[in-house]
Image 1 (cartoon, protein in one colour):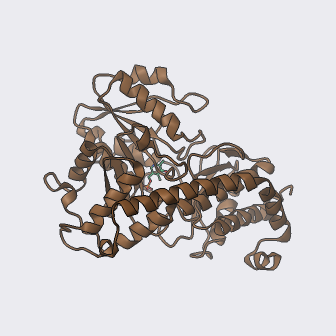
Image 2 (tube, protein in one colour):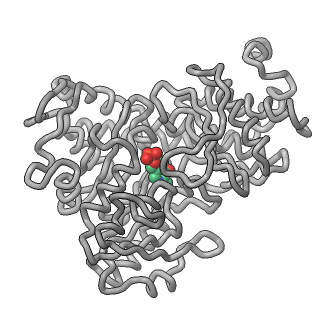
Image 3 (tube, rainbow, N blue to C red):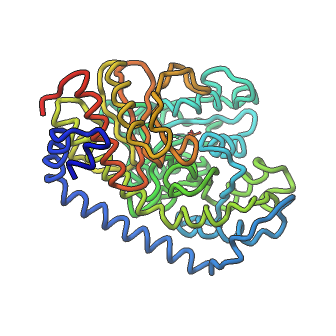
Length: 424
Ligand SMILES: *Cc1c(COP(=O)(O)O)cnc(C)c1O
């Protein structure tokens, strides 16, 4: 092992440090394996219920009428998420697009959107129009209000009650922390917020941004009353095999509206060729529970390793997990850069390139990203990124296999150790 890690660039002392951290994590890893086992059974059962068969993998072209593979996949997703229906499409280009469709489909001019989990994910600011943007909801006369989370990261029910008014149409809840250092919300906590919102105004549509949360627990937000649960296929539910796509699982009415928005009024779910991507979407969903388990082990390993070295990590080494993201506050651009170099150097693809910060579309500060992925931008694959701003935190996520996630973290420690010797 020393010899192989040595050839990859990981020194004996870094490897030994990693092993000593891992010794403490056996029980955590066992419980992650238990969740994966449960979710694997859930996915298999959903595929059996919908009688998935080889014909589901056939490509369709053109309009994509009568696409049995597409229809069946949407039933399988609805089954896994416990919803009436689902929209699962390669035509949904990413998570932001899925969320934009879900919002635009259900908000009409004069309606108000309320975020009850504080500031939304960076790219949604332009979708909503918090930052002025062409085609935003604001341009269409949809207003926006926000109820911040409390200091401890829990919902502020008083603020939510005060923000709901006769125009409130959709309430958005973001499960994951995104580029913030607040706790991620559990499905149970999300359920309480949904119940509270509906007790004040029953017709408010509750939409959960579920990015990075799928299969982390044995339940999903849709099982706690959310009307729409939305995410990206190049994150958790694509299992690393989906080459693109997004999903919206929810009530019949909401999903229908989303389909009419995504394609065209009158066409809805009936069109949309699958371009031969169906096998990857099914097989990726099949692999997703164990891929998510690998990513979670990596996140917990990173948390414990960096915490032991005195860095602030969110979540901390012992907290329960509700998404696969690990934030590590490194305190400077230099250390963020070293961390990302380590992740990049551990990659199977593009391992020889050096990540540099750049101005990415949709983000308001420079962002550094490390990824050596088979699927461009896939963040269920081992990746790290973060905006170059206080508190100089990197957000680490993914890993299709646990050994790869482990290597990435060891490499990040190695690169930091080389410029600022760690006390290991
Ligand atoms: C990744 C993510 C999104 C969407 O991002 P895309 O890069 O467009 O897929 C939205 N919200 C959260 C919390 C996310 O993590």
